[in-house]
Structure formats: structure tokens, C-alpha cells
Image (cartoon, rainbow, N blue to C red; front, side, top):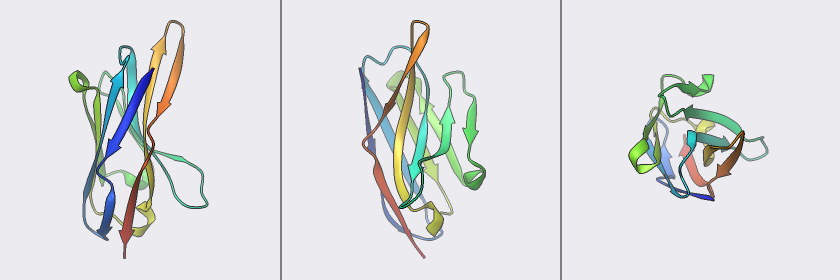
Amino acid sequence: QVQLVESGGGLVQAGESLRLSCAASGSTSGINTMGWYRQAPGKQRELVATTASGGTTNYADSVKGRFTVSRENAKSTVYLQMNSLNAEDTAVYYCYARQTVQWSYRDYWGQGTQVTVSS
């Protein structure tokens, strides 16, 4: 089992920055993709950004150029640097990890951290 613990959420003004962190613990061997999803009130959970163990990254169009996902493999930690935040970024942000298990995989989620951007 893998546990994911997020930190770094909060309340900021539009235009400001925040950095989210997520540390994985437990049986972390085999984790390849880590990243972030978010869910705003009344909306479905959506991809924000992910990074694979080889360094490949993937971003939602709405955050490209503003958010940067990075990773410390040795610490099984993933970060999300969020710049130029706007009200549409307000959501609960969830850390995500995919672990390869034999010929299948398991997905893990953190408990979520609230990001609120006031305009």
C-alpha cells in the first residue's frame, strides 16, 4: 500500500503563487507516474499535471505556462508550483500516484488540499 500526504494549499489573491507538495510513503517501489488532479465545486475531477519516472510531463491546457510539476524520485515526492493563479484555479487538489504491480497497476490518491484564489 502507498500513502500520499499533500501540503501547501491555502488562500491567495489572484496573481499570486502557491507550491503544493505530496510525499508518498509505504511500499513505494514501482511508482511510475505521480501528479495532481483537482476538483472544483459542482465539477468533475480533472487532470492538472503529471510526471512519469522518466521525466515526461503532461499538463492540462488551462495551466500550461503557469504551473510546473516536478519530482524527487529519491524522496518519492511530487511538487506543483502554481504561478499567476486565478479564481478558476480554486479547487481541491489531489495528489495521484500510479504503481505498476506485476502486469497491472494500482492508483492511489491523497486526501486533498484546498486551494482558494480570491479575485
